[in-house]
Image (cartoon, rainbow, N blue to C red):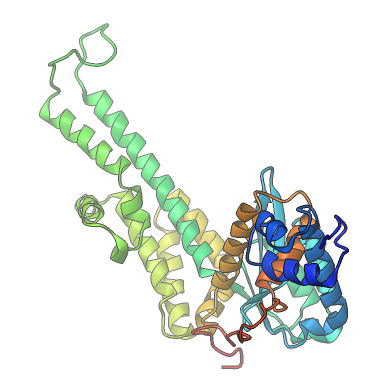
Length: 365
């Protein structure tokens, strides 16, 4: 049996290729199905095109809650934009590139009724996604992904840590006695005074505290927990205040309902705005602009976690293929592997997809 590079050939070879290509590497498919290596991508592209043509626009019927994100598939800032259905837990659309023009391609494929039927859209803090969805999906409620909100605060916390470390290191250097005109490191056996040694130890403890600060307290190791407790003993430390604000921001997403989340978030924004830590104040301004979107994440119990899981599968697919030169073949393989039109192996029971998102709440609730 032989399949040409354009994806044509006998039916048995096509069936074998398409069933195994979603689970194996191209080289394994080539050997198992006895097809040309370069034809595997063409087979996937042709089969996916036929499936999509048969379903038409009806494949987007029933889509209510979607997640939008972009993920890199190649060096040099090469991205793929993906759209995931939260209710079915599968990839429903993917395209090479990123930006408004690419996302408009997806929205153009939807009918007017389908765009109006979308109730929830989750994404990161990209403004262009929000502006475009708000204009073309008037009934959609925007939800800010909790992970990205906490990530903003973690980045600010790490920046404060670097500032504190540099300040402590400079203080230790300034306190070290030096004979006039002598520069460089101290001579062998020359011990610094006790106060200088204490400053150096303090700088070293701040330098190695990154993971103790950004990790969840319940996930800390014994050493990291001890390092964090040592930092807490420093009264009036900017670093400790920034860490406390980070933990208070995490507590917002553990609120029982939207009203409690709104109360906690308003209190956090007030304290962050007057904390006199520039990096934290910058995060507070971003959070204030997205206040309603953050509260919506708590009310609906939904995040972009499902989209990130699909992104991980995309990374695995790219690694299995050692990269893809033809992005059309990559998109077709992703849709067959992560979409709702996955081919089933012969003699295997059809696996039904789980309906709904764990812990998610209805928009009308």
